[in-house]
Length: 274
Image (cartoon, rainbow, N blue to C red):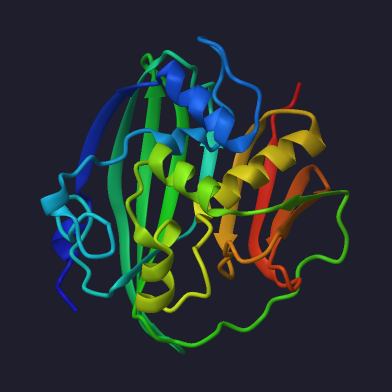
């Protein structure tokens, strides 16, 4: 494993306007109401911003940017969005000039049943027109190509709201395009199945989290104040799956289930108080 200690504390800053047409395209992709200029972006939509626009020569075989640069040069081949924690301080509005400052906060190597693992935590601070809007901790895990199947985890026993998500290649392609995510597992079916060994196209972790945020707000009837989520098992475009939520005291528990009823992602939401 490469020595990545020099990457701890590394920072980068990116600035981008929240373009109205981006919001229109995300709304079309997710079948949501179109935000107007000045409206607050729904939670999770900020992931379409601040993404690296690397030239083709700077991409690896999997479609990700080559290792190094801001992110540490970890040699393990698979990179996955494992989870995160978000605090919403103020709306991120359509038309705003936004700035994101990012920092490599943690790099930790472990050995699990699937072999070597490296966990990287990136902290983000997003401001809109000079006002703090979102603080986020983004968990990334690197692992090898092998490892077998993870043990099945049972989801919560009941839910107050349930929705069925029917994934398809068009949805995954459009979300990849909007977030400028070149990772081929989300839109290149031969690569996903024959090279990386998945049963189909991989449903984006942040897309699942975005759907769970919307479900939590719908159940709770108020905007999010905080949201945390953790990926447990992957989802694919091979069959519909369910997203569910229930009240848990003063919080909302939300989760996604695989088509066979196992836990795919768990989440907890705290809503703003009137």
